[in-house]
Length: 101
Ligand code: FES
Image (cartoon, rainbow, N blue to C red):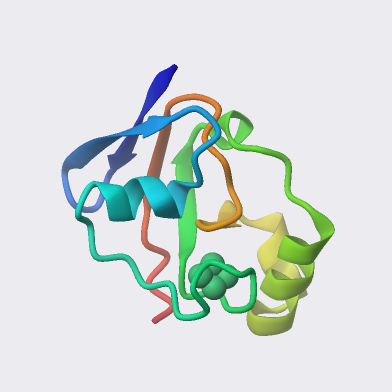
């Protein structure tokens, strides 16, 4: 199954395989997206801001919560943010870069 990822701040849309991480889908599509730790849940440079379809991403695990909290603060967990390397695509989503870096 293939889903779409719309990058609302770039006016671009790409495809992602079900279960693929958002980061991998972005990189596979030739999009230059920061991922300083290499996708190991140990930075927040790969973060995405989810504009639509938060429920179409895999559940957030404790490691991802810890990393987001450690780098960006507790309140970020209440926002529409995910680590691109940890969030797996399960439906269509619309995202943008949160602009933290
Ligand atoms: S690339 Fe570092 S947490 Fe995703």
